[in-house]
Image 1 (cartoon, rainbow, N blue to C red):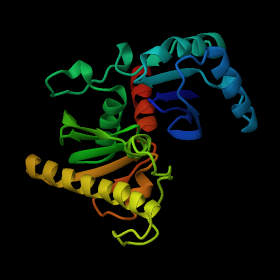
Image 2 (image 1 turned 135 degrees about the vertical axis):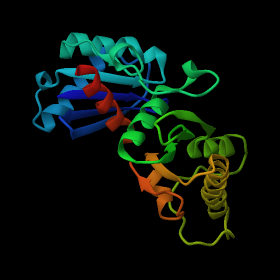
Image 3 (image 1 turned 180 degrees about the vertical axis):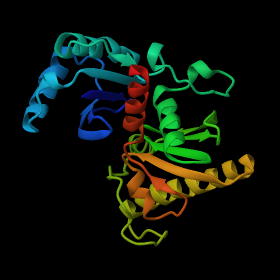
Image 4 (image 1 turned 120 degrees about the horizontal axis):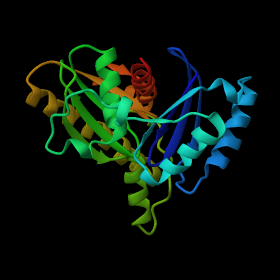
Length: 258
């Protein structure tokens, strides 16, 4: 089995693949100080709950935007799984796609993995919207080349900034609006409307501008934890694919092993 690890700024997601099938997925808060031993104890317990032996994982691939987490994941792979981990974008796990931007080396691993997976799964020109700590828009042409994108503040970061920089506004959770009204009758509703519907307007506006600039029809693929929250209230998404990054890692690992 393959252990795929997606290290984001907020969470680390582990997924176990048996061939093309994702058997299990687990999430833990990102902490670069977390040791390989700590990861191992946590993973071992979760795998036992699902009846999976730790020795069943015989390969590991990592996509990371947190450089300080790398060493501890290497320790996890070597000490507990007895494998040398692949790192997405390096060596046998190289991208093998055209990155048509001014500074290709600055492209985040998660965004490159999303581009590879999206092109493999969906035909034509693509706009991949990933709801993470930041919300990113990545453009992939019909040949699979990465053409650039947009980085916007993530919705939770926007809300945190609003609350932390005001004296009286309460902390609220991001959730689906209670109705379609954009006129709030109390402070909490007004905050939710501003953040939620403001985000929908931002996404719809940027996607329209991207499509106009591409000059061809482009499918919009949404991924990330909050994608389903917005899907109900906008028609811009052609598909919601929450596991796109993990699937992309599995694709790259399979290619590297052939």
